[in-house]
Image (tube, rainbow, N blue to C red):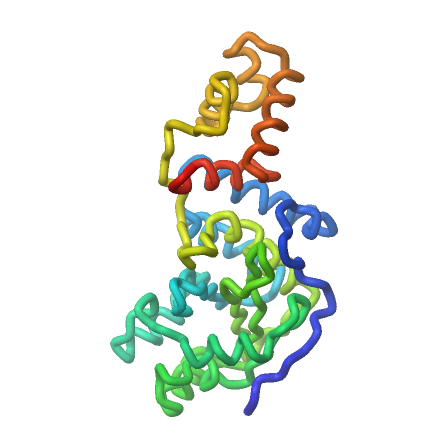
Length: 278
């Protein structure tokens, strides 16, 4: 059966979103986005963070099998499998397939063609379309039986320039009813935390803030001291106390730093500073 293109009942975030405005209609999701970004700044890997949030995501969506596929240098690959029982991993291993080595080329082309608006999603009534060119039809049907598959919903993860950088896939079983109004909210959460970690130019995703540039040429000496303290998880009041300056002065410096690097959040700033060439 061909995928069905539908409009979500709730708009997903539009392109070039660099703040949390699109999450403000759900305070819980907003808090989760802030929490995840804080964990990233502390150096935790996004994979581990998202796995710890599976119970929350499942409760919001009534979905217990989710995957995030990202475009890595022209190849659509499994990046995260948010599946507490590891059913997806076990199912693919049954065919001696390692999920991270898959190239979902046919599915990628289908998504780019069918999902041409940020506020739309694609519904799959079979896994055959998802694994086209990777698994045989019989193998896909075998997975459907193992998963007790009912349907799947595919939502686009957009980059800052409106491009598709990946997709969220929510897989529902026969005994599950999707909470459709929350699918786009959770996808917006994924998009918010993934965008700053994704380098559009090289089509590369960095799951952890690891690259460090110590020179920070755009910053003054005071700004360098402030940002180094900030990236070591110091709050604005702590920074003010350590540098013996007022809190308002710290905030003014931070506004200048954000303006210099054209960012609107601490996580974006972290990634921009740590990118090569800055």
